Amino acid sequence: MSIERSIADAVGREGAPTMSTRAKLLALLVCPACRDGDLAGLDERRADGAVVCTACGAAYPVRSGIPILLSAGSDGDLAHDEIAHAAGHKHAQAAYFDRGVAEEFEISRPHAAPSMYRALIERKFRRGVAGLPPLRGASVLDACCGSGMDAEMLAREGAAVIALDISEGCAIRAGERAARYGLDYLVVVGDVERLPLRDCGVDIAFVHDGLHHLAQPESGVRELARVARQAVSLNEPADAFGTEVMVRLGLAQAWEDAGNRVARLRSADVARALAEAGFDDVTARRYLMYYRHQPGSLMRLASRARLRRAYEAGASLADAALGRWGNKLQVTARRAA
Image 1 (cartoon, rainbow, N blue to C red):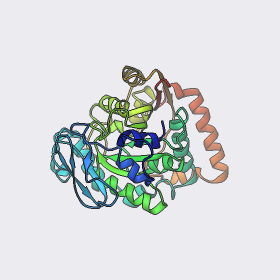
Image 2 (image 1 turned 90 degrees about the vertical axis):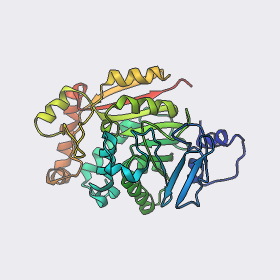
Image 3 (image 1 turned 120 degrees about the vertical axis):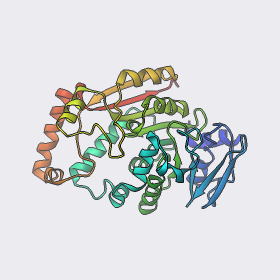
Image 4 (image 1 turned 30 degrees about the horizontal axis):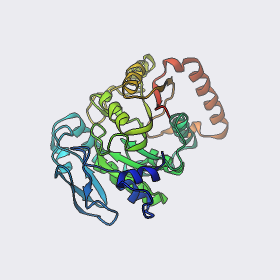
C-alpha cells in the first residue's frame, strides 16, 4: 500500500489535500505511550514547543523541528535531556551517540570516503532492499537511523522515510544531512522498542546495524514487525563462528564504545519472531563482509583502480566460500499480499 493510501487511512478519508512528504509522515506518528492517540499540534510549522496525545494526554517536546517521542516506558526515561545522566543500557547508547562521534564524518558518510568503502556500503544496502516491495512511493521506517546514511539511500530510491533514533544527537545530524543534500525525509527521536506508530503504520520497516545496540534485540524485531504492513528488512551482526573469529583477532568488537556488549543475532531466532508476527515469506542469509566504521589507510589503498579490482574479486570469493558462516546477517520478511 502506498504512502498516499496510508495517509488517507490515517486521517480517515480519501482525497486529502496535497501535502509535503514531511507533513504526510507526521500524520503517521502516534503517541508511543498508548500507541493509539494522535499528537495534537504536530505539524510542519512547529519548530519548538510540545505536542500532546489526544488519547492519554502524554506530552512530548519538539526541538528544532524534531519530535522527541520517548515515552516513560522507554527503559524508564522521563525526558531525553536526562538520558546522559541515567543508568541503563539504552541510555548509555544514546548518551554516547549524542556526543561521542565524529560529527562531520557521520553527516557525510559515505560521500567523502574512499571508493571501495562506498562500494561496500552500497553493496550492503542493496542486500537489504533486494527482496522488498518497490520502494518508490512506499512509507519506510528507518529505525536506529544514526546520522541518516540509510535514510538518504532509501529516500533516493523514492521512499518516503521516517528516520528514527533514540539519540537526539543522531537525529540532529540526520536532519543536517537532509538539509545538506536536499532530502525530504522526516527525523524523529524515538525508541525502536516502543515505536511511535500504529500497528501496520508504515509499508516497510528497515534497520541496518541498529538492533545490536539493544540488550534484547528480539524486542526490536517484534516492534519492527508490529508496525510494518508489507515487509521488514534487517541487516545486523550475526552470532556466528566468523564473528567470533573476528573478535578474537581484534577485527570486531565484543564491547561497544558506549560500554555495552554488542548483541549479535541468530537467523533462526529472528526468522521465528517474524513468522510469529504474521510474515509468511522470511528469508535469512549470512554473508561475509568487513570494513572499519571509519576507513583507514588500507581502505584508501584498496580504492586504487587496480587494487580495487583485486580486492573486490577476493572479497567475492571469500563470501562465496565462507558466507554461510559469515559475520553478517540479512533477513527480509514479507506478508502475504
